[in-house]
Image (tube, helix red, strand yellow):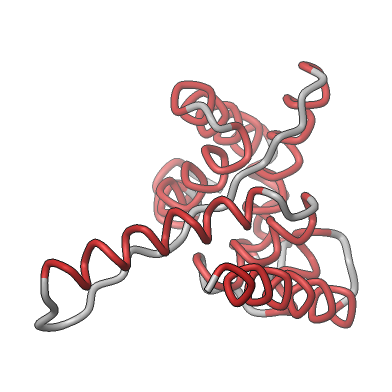
Length: 164
């Protein structure tokens, strides 16, 4: 794989890689460093990348593993999941404030989920990955991903219902 192909096929994931790294590491500078590190590692393996069927999933799984390795080395696993910003049409200031409050509350509940559930809900609901891709990224089977996603959503839904 030459540098142009690498740029066109790998470097296009920079935003997703950064968001994933930042959500896992909770540190913007460390996330930027991890993105650079993963690009170096992928560049070193560039000749074998053409053989990979789903490059997007492979790159995201590599980033997740790199971040988890970094956390394990620091002995602090504390993962967070980001939510998509709500972009509704024609709403009042009061509704905007309510949505921001709810978004913060949901982020807090997501932070309390086990690491695997946090990663799965982020990959599915924020990044839009398919169940099959998430199974590959998390080294799980599709059924386990579906179950964990369902449990994560149920926990968050129940927590929200209990505060009302």
